Image (cartoon, rainbow, N blue to C red; front, side, top):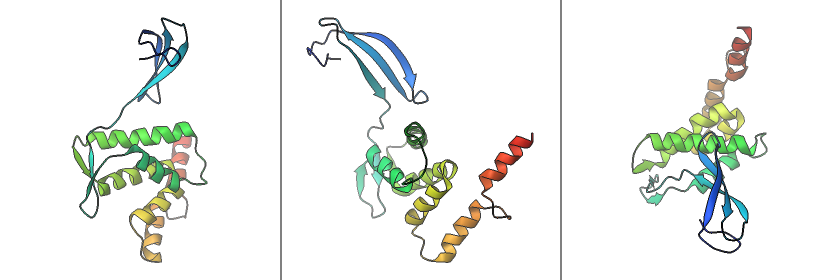
Length: 166
């Protein structure tokens, strides 16, 4: 690792720690020549993964596209940057678990919907409405009904109440 000040390759790692639920490493470094201290970050990167689009085209996986789609679904919703990073890392971990060189965009969409459903219900509905291309109100209502219990409460709230009673 080169020093950003004097560009020498002689740097020493002073401290390493796991961050983002052990999906990344932060290293504190010091230049042996000029003494400048700086941090570097190492993060898992999905390499050589091709995404097969609906029309059959193939393109390399891009984390930025996943983040952009999630940010669009989460627009004006309350979430922290830390929780967002964890969501992206969890989705990428699910993709990696498939252990394939190629994955369909539909499979990625299903993984995203599964994770969004637990992360934020409104964002899940937004993403699902675009991803599944709801054509009528009945299809939209069916998806909403799957999120609600018989009393009209979100199923997550019902589960939280069960936990608090224990």
